[in-house]
Image 1 (cartoon, one colour):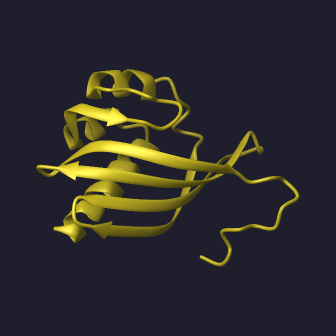
Image 2 (cartoon, rainbow, N blue to C red):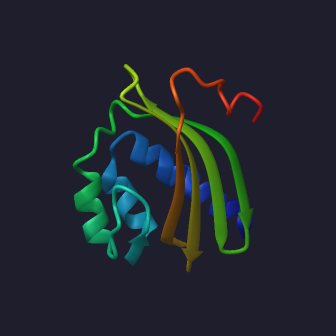
Image 3 (cartoon, one colour):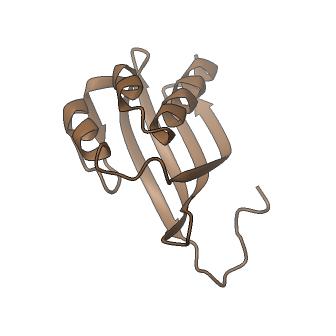
Length: 122
C-alpha cells in the first residue's frame, strides 16, 4: 500500500510539473483539501483553478526524499525558477484516501542566495 501511495504522489508531481492538470485531476478526491501556499483550497475544483494560474513550465523540481507510511506520504524537494525568482526547500505531507490524494500540507524554507546548499547532503 505505501509503495503505491508514493507512486501516486510521484505521478501527480510529474503531471503537475508539466502543467498537465487534466492528468492530475483524476488523482485527487473531489473534496481534496490543500493547506499549503499558494492554494489553501478545500475542493479539487478550487485547486485546479488556482493551480492553473501558476508558472508550471518554468518550475524546476528536484525530489530528494519520499517516505510512505500507511495513508501518508512525505516528500522533500528543492524547487526553483530559473533566474532566481524562487529558490525553496519544500516538505510536503500528503494523505491518501481510497487510492486518491485527499489532503496536502507543506513546510517551505526560502534558500538564501549566499547560503550553503542545505540539500546537498540529502
